[in-house]
Amino acid sequence: MTTAAALTVDQAHARLHELTVIDVRAPGEYAAGHLPGAHNIPLDHLDTALPALRTAAGRGELLVVCASGARSAEACRRLAGHGIPASGLTGGTNAWREHGHTTHGDTGTRARWAMERQVRLAAGSLVLTGLLAGQRWGAARWLSAGVAGGLVFSALTDTCGMARILAKLPHNRPEATALDATLAALAG
Image (cartoon, rainbow, N blue to C red; front, side, top):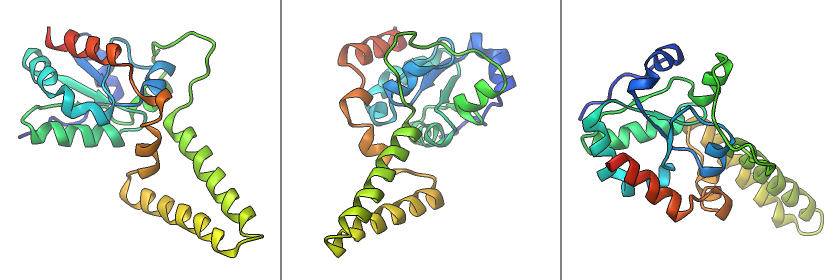
């Protein structure tokens, strides 16, 4: 049950041709831009993908990526718990882009929002709703307090419950056929 050390952007870029890249972000985030050749398996579908990932890991090293590295670190821990070694990408796709490397993604006109942006919109909307509704009904301010507490907890633990909830929305879910195709490609 070992997890390989995280790779820096430069290390991953130099070895990209020999790595199997697994992007654990939501499909909308993945479509907005991902590492060349990356396969999208959202974090909440990781358990379903274990057999295919075990097969892929038997053929070579897995590199798990997300936006910043938090979700990929969680994925690497979970994979290690199932005896599947994987490395994370230090800094995630954000660092990849900051180093000037290209990403592949949807060139369609539909705008895709990163999960972080979706969380900011939802949290801000809930806080504002709580404050405005609190003008008429004082107890509504507890909504704002709850969201604030959740944001503090999120920062302290480097987890995000709101992102987990938002990931379940239809535009953040993979189409069954897309996930099945990804799993078949990895298992084959």
